[in-house]
Image (tube, rainbow, N blue to C red; front, side, top):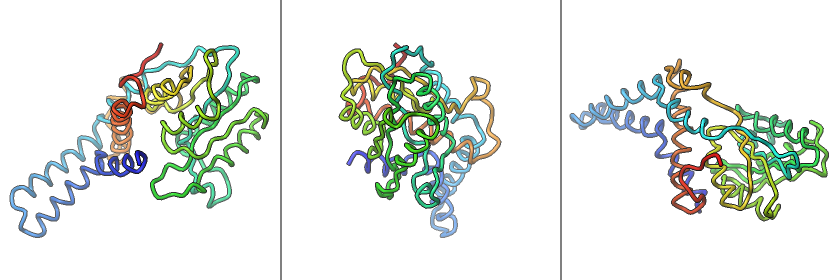
Length: 266
């Protein structure tokens, strides 16, 4: 229920969705000639937000603190496992085309494999199912990801695949049942830098001793974050991404899935 509610609510409250609805309502009011002043205000506010949020650095400013919250490592020499969070795979495309398809977060996979190769005694753990609202479980790409990890040089007996979870909390909960982490066991968590605060808080709450290994950075630093965007699409995409994480941090804290709103480096 939490999964479906979060997907439906987020689709409605994302900044790009709100701006689109404002523009549509404003246009409808103007065309019907019944909207009056409110439709003009709605249309004007929608266009203003489109320009400010699209070309302006709003998304970058909201993303930067998420990405700066955790630094990499240091890693223990006797690491027990490398946890790779899904979200970099295109499950439906993988199934349709018969080959593993990845998105811009593919560094989660490549860096996770690199860490696994550097720690030959550690298990390499992938967790992630099909996260789209209307997709079926068979669209998950876990088997294809497992084959790719083995082809990259990781022994099959070191591999742990979990392909049912659809959210960060489900990732942690599923791995807790599979791995049953004990005191003294140490894991490294590989995910996108903007997602790392929520992921670290969730896995800590699930009983894992995790070290952050952020990848897939979207900002290069403060100057990059405050630089205007070259396209409205790019600006809104980053804003939606950052907005989702900030709302996710609040929702996970309120629902008890994390112990604190703003997890930090220990």
